[in-house]
Image (tube, rainbow, N blue to C red; front, side, top):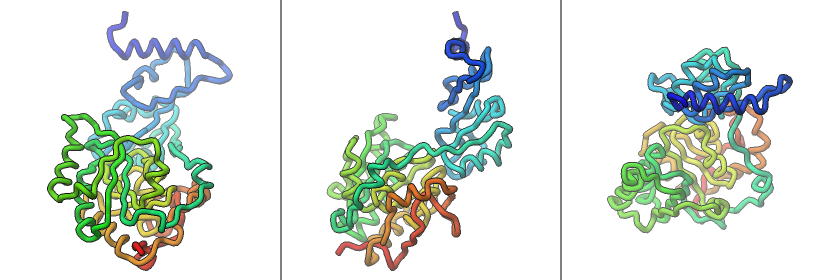
Length: 325
């Protein structure tokens, strides 16, 4: 009998560790959600190599030093040196964890996604085959994605560029009686966007959706890496994102392979999209997939001048952004 779930979990971990025990090759335990086995991995009967993997931002998506910590990692970060290694998905988060906690545990940066060879080698889809002004989003319709803010920005875009459309792919979070989807629908109704904004639901056919689009939008309040924006750029979409940790503001470099606007600034987001749509020509090399592979080993940073990103360094700006012809 066990008095707590922690004791039960510890017994499970000890049994697993014992079953596969090897003096020459110790077992490796990777903890992706701190509240599942955080305490147990600190009290194993036999040694093992334990890794605390930060799957998301450890604090605010805007302030890595914010006093309120992501509850998934609160225990493990307070006991950070009890683990052998800490893994983050971006160099920026690794640096922020180091600055805040000064761990003796070894820090590793391991991106959680790669662009597959199939996509790297796929023919580029020319602008003439894409729907002008179409923005696509792949995300859960959930509070943290703040898609109501994205839709508010899109309303301004649609006023300036009536051809623009917004397709939202992803299932709706049912929290608080589908509050996030209802918030988006409210914006649609208020701005009469019923013909321009579409809930597409869940799909596995990402290629078709993104090869038809022109832009990708992101207004989350935090991320851990954001595979969707990486995949969108690999498909040739131009990303427009809030300046939010972690991933979107590193994978996207402002005026290089997309736009990064101040967090929460709906007007700036809208203006960035409008500028892209109202300028004369498409980027000459929007996120060529092979550029992603070429630069994949370079240190990703936050879109600051003079540093390389995961994507192409070819710049585009007001003289080279796209317009429907």
